[in-house]
Length: 380
Image 1 (cartoon, rainbow, N blue to C red):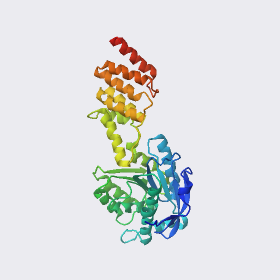
Image 2 (cartoon, one colour):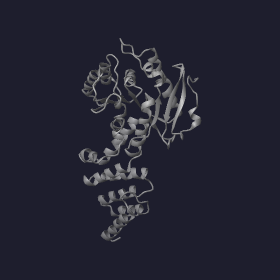
Image 3 (cartoon, one colour):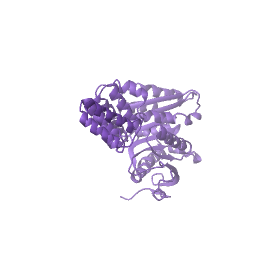
Image 4 (tube, rainbow, N blue to C red):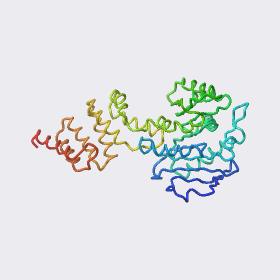
């Protein structure tokens, strides 16, 4: 099938080492050229999958989203992402892109074309040429925040997550959005960020908030953050990091609070918690996440705390897969045999762990102490 879009400066030729690039995208739908910025992680790997973030008002929000993406993926367990920013500031083109009919609240003819430009040109282009994950997010502010809501009314929402910053709501949107979120058969993350300064839009925004927060639905993850000291201009710089923190909460490493309140109190095998956590990440984001060493150590600590030594065996198998050069897998397996009362198997397995690389708190000295103790106890 013939491509309907052409990129003025081909991104494929650039490679992704550029990290951030700004290109002129020639749109068939809009019949005009548009400035678009792209960010790719520095260590982009086509064998990995990356969630895609579409940023409206790219002139103002793109750099902020990229900075937060880099920071949170480096230090806070969030996945690395591909970010695309749509520039809309020249001649206030954002007002035309996102305009709506005053009587119906639906997009104008130009708004419909802009809707198709994003959904049938920009996103398919990135999906085709780069290693994007199924999980997609959109970020907007003011009138562009209102515009992103129109994707909710598709049979299947193109986006899994919405970051809605101080929206200027179209007529009836305060009722339509909650109704759609209540009806949609899809897991949706919806983040609403508002300023403390009151405006003519405040009553509608708060009406929408109150309606959404009353929706009881497992597939809807709704977050509301209000910043009392912010005005309508400043709010554009608030809350993006917090929104990422909310939306990617399950992606983060196990915290001390999670360990105490969820793992230690959970019914069933301790290892099941870890298995369910990573299966949930794969189901939601569309790719496997490597198991964090932090999470392995949390589960190991819980097996000892709860005396759930049966969980040591699947944990050891996981460690052999995730950290194959290290002591983890064989050391945990040896402890499993030790607790089961199989000293010969435990001894041989501790000896295997002794020959592997040290990691975290596990040292060769610890393995040697176990080996010597077993030999002394059983006269080997």
